[in-house]
Amino acid sequence: MEHTQQASQTEKAIYQNGRGYRVEATTIGDTVVFFAEGGGFVRRMPRAEFDAQFTVAAEPRFAQVAVAGAWMDDGIALPAYSDGVRWNGWLMPYFTREVAIRLIPLVESLRYDEARDVFVALDPNEGDEIVYGAEVIRVGDDDVVTYSIGAGEWCWEEAHETPQEARVRDA
Image 1 (cartoon, rainbow, N blue to C red):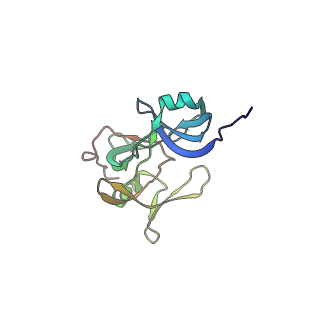
Image 2: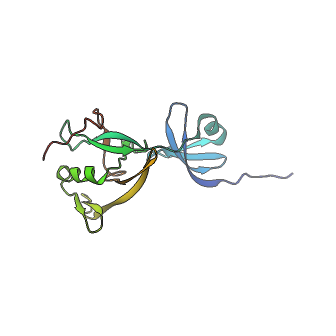
Image 3: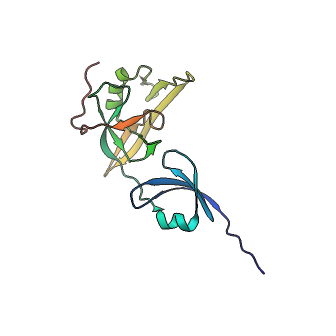
């Protein structure tokens, strides 16, 4: 009697269920190992059950949003770009240079290093520098130079204002 075992393969893919809940699958075999997109508890599910609930998610597209941080005063929001990807439930915004410069008076340790074209913040726990370099993202038909300041590290949330209304008070 011949026994065939399906080999598992490791992939990094984003899947989505019918309600829009997105997960990142790390191992796909008889059992699928996955977690909420952007972080969370590791879950396991039989492959047939996973396939019945999830399909490969479409490539996220960037759009303009307004963002705020809990450390900012009420009513302060900044225009940013987001592709909807989240880290532990928090937005991961991308800012143009002009908007990122407006962040400097709002974030104590943030500065712009013009020679390197990077924004630099200090890690409050370790004291190390965190460097945010320029990244080109695709927004519609345009390439936009952005900086993902605090994305995947800070608790950014979508502001209730629209990006056109989002203003920063003079600091």
